[in-house]
Amino acid sequence: MQHLTSAPAADMRVVDAATGDEITHVLTLDEGAGRIRRLKVNGDSLVVERGDFVIIDEERAFRIEPRVALLPAPSEEAPAGDDAE
Image (cartoon, rainbow, N blue to C red; front, side, top):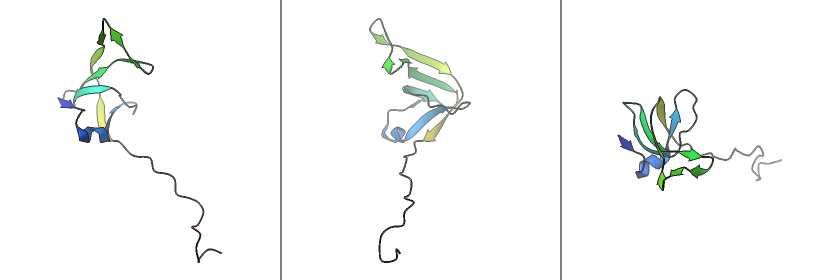
């Protein structure tokens, strides 16, 4: 089982294999067995029952992808300089 708490994991994301939607709040995963352990979330809040966070253990198809930083789009204008007319 891989734990997504190590430094390199911050550059990775877990996505549902069928939909491509990101699976958030993942605590651990087992790629070979297709198992994920994650925190239950309602809206933007973690779900708590009897003083404990609710943990979901599930089997589902998923993949791990690198987290891609969004770069600003290149400017359409030519840079100002001696070549500009």
